[in-house]
Length: 431
Image 1: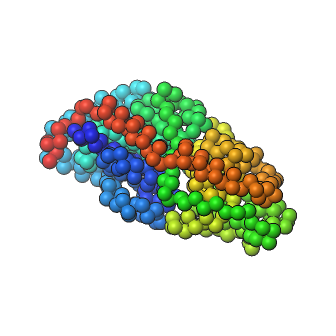
Image 2: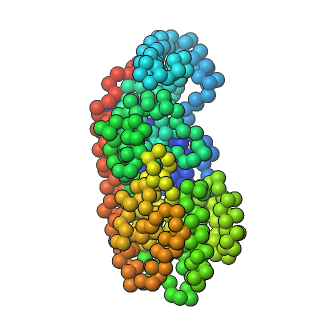
Image 3: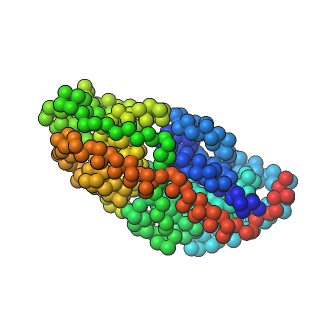
């Protein structure tokens, strides 16, 4: 068993490393800082741009390659039968008992569930050293649950909200199984808690823990309100999707240009609706005022934050059964950098910023509301420092990576200590 003073956590995430999900890097750093040993499984085999922290901390050395192909499972099955028949026998018995219970409780497909459990029991023995499994998001949560069940390991899930439109939803039987078998579900806001509960997760299993921000990565550099002839820099960062409300942000920009505001709107991100957004830019004749950027390095992204005066997050939604923002980490990044956010009053956003104190909250689907918020701030330059300093204080007090990391470590250590007591087989039999 792993040394209880240094628990081993298997972190399961669909995208690592990824510049679009740098929060996972911060989370991993905090686990290391709190004396955890980590293993990482990710389906992202060809990472592009990512945060320099990944290399500075050598996080990729913790990635383990779990081959989930059917052909690899068959080879492992034959090899185990020849070299470790006893282990195969115990795996069959255990998978049979677990699959029988899962089929009865959650109506999963019997044969397929048994085979998936068997595969989970025979892949990389490195998993046997884990004291807890922590899955981030739903895409790999069911697989992580099977690993946990076959190894008697506590299974923790961070629910980041529903999947965006266009992505296939998690089947109901799998979701029910995850909700029933998970030890703890972490959510970042009360809104996300209600979303998870609406999907059948028992409220007793849910804990609210926001995503933390490494303050040292975001230097506070407040900007003055630009003068009448100076350029106002607006910034949006996020997935290029209609749900993010870019259409309303662009119409707001057109309103501002018409009102005589000299602006440059910078939009950073990747996604399925890039051509749609470009079409709106062309139709509104904003090509001289709007620039689209794809994923960029953290240094360049940091430069964008420090250039921008105002940050726009015009996300749509607010219903528990549809995707919407549950926290909007970019808001904390903007505030930490001295950029004033203008965001829609949807999802968990109102829990994370304070209207009239450190941000401006507006109604969704209203380009007029966005443009009026911008014009209000331009007309009140004396309030900028107030908003900026309160924004930085909001992040320091409520979203600091150190504060969130300590709470995360406490939860995972508690789960690891209360969890796995029974092993499939002693480690010595696998060597």
